[in-house]
Length: 254
Length: 258
Image (cartoon, rainbow over all chains, first blue to last red; front, side, top):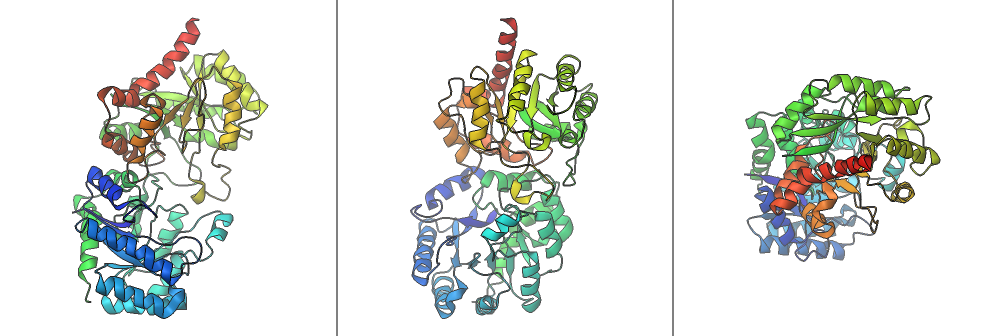
């Protein structure tokens, strides 16, 4: 079973790709399930807007229940509102975990209640991440989580199921990998448009195949192509493509 | 038959590549079912005397010319570049020149670039422009490479209205409305959940695209996979897989005859 742990969609295509187009692409590339969210990536992610976008993901899940699993996106800056939205989406509606964007870094204290709630339920947090090399790009996302931020969060919460998003998201992925060696509880998704030769083999070498989760982040050809091209054993490939994600999701207790 | 119009061998100065030799490229091509490839030498990106990389490339593909067709790199600011380019054409049998303006210190819209393309035309070589070599978001602090500015590239294209350029690793079509449309390779047309390439082919026509992977800098399967997944007629598929590139070169042969 192939599980894409990092995707985005909305039921009507009003933000991100439409659920139907997403599934069309999944069919073409043989992807069984995509775990989707609809994060707000610019402007204020207010509670009402967050709720609206999560509703678009929930509707996608209802339209394609066997193919689209949802993450609940929240802006932790809204404290209790965010926790209530997580309860609504994860406990009430069956979303598989929480998606966080660059509103705050993963080790910011404002995240702690969100992380603690996810620990209580044993569900994953998919955290937008990266280290753009150019300073001007870093300035555009000043709160973008880098590996050292994951190290801090993982040391404080070693039991948290943190996923560092898209190693190929556009940045110095080698630097991210070296940093993540110090956070052995953190998973890494393989998504992003960067398909540098040797990237996946290097991920396996630095972190181990059991910490890697297959992801496309909207680009099925690149997402799948780099896993198929990498020099991996069959066991490693199967683990990355789906088994690791399924094992992670089985840990849910709530 | 599959022909890859966009491959590299050699050393990339800013990152350790797992595979660098012509034999590595051939093995990768075999795994992907690619019969022939147009190949450049990354060593020429930062050599002071770029032409040394052409000689290295010619030696590297010797005995493999049935599958690997070498492409020239030239720094038009360096003494003797015309003689070097002529040598690429006549001694090394390189039919195609790849321009790397950011690395070789000239603007793509500059008189230097025009002089280089003019001379390539004069000695019956075709020219390829590169949208970029690597993703600038992850570049090394000393790497001068940037995304090629479409407006600046257009100025060069406009200076040679009769020339069909090969456009490698561009993110989109940048010569809309041109009387002689350029040929684009596909590695950056494969997004949008794998649905984009077919949409682009439907929009612009199969005659505008050619298979390109950017091996050995990157994994090659994404381009091959995306093309395989497109719903195309046999004729359209054949066009993208090899025929367009053949016709691109035939254009050169026709120019030569006339």
